[in-house]
Length: 216
Image (tube, rainbow, N blue to C red; front, side, top):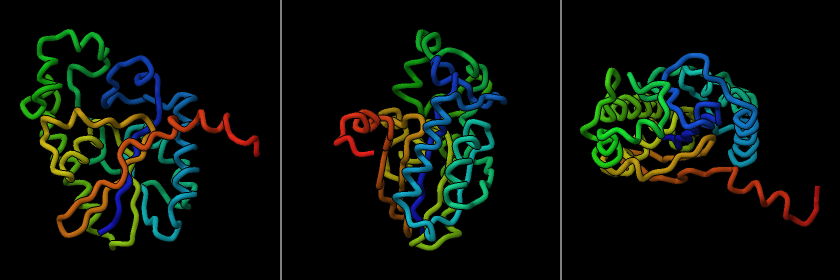
C-alpha cells in the first residue's frame, strides 16, 4: 500500500483571524497562503521521486483546491476532488470566533472528551473521523507499496486520520498539531500504519534562509 501525504491547506483570513470557516464557500487563500502553497509544491517536488507520485486529491473547498494547484502542477497531475476530505461540519459554530467559542461551558468537551461531542447542527468528531478514514482507506487500496499519493485537506480531518492510524484514542487527538500548509505522512500496509512525518511546517525553517552563507 502507498505512502499518503496529508497536506493542510494554506493560510486564509479565517485562519489569520481565528474564526471557523468550516464549509463556507468562497474562503480563499490569502497572500501568505498562496506563498505557503508554492513552498509546499517546491519542497515536495524536490523531495519526492516524480514517477512514484501517482495522484493528488483535494477537499472540494476553495482553500484546499488552491493549495493543491501548485503541487499538482509540479508533478504534472490533475487535482481530483474528493468529498471525503472536506472540512468537519461545524454546524452553528461555523463563522464564529474560536476565542468566543472557548468561553462556552461546552468547550471543555471539545478539548477533553471530543469522542462525545457533536457540533450543534453539524457532525460529531467521531463521524468526521469515520468519514476521512474511510476515504483514505478507499484511496490507498488502489495503489502499490512504492506509490505515493497526496491529499490536501483540513486541520481536524488530518489530525483525526493520524490519530486513527497510529492508534491514538479519539479523546487525545487534540494533542496533535497540524499547522497551515504543513506536511504529514503515513505509510499503511496490511493494516499496519507508520507515522513518517507530523506537522512538517516549512515556515519554521524560513529564518534559516536569511542566516546562511550568503549563497544565492
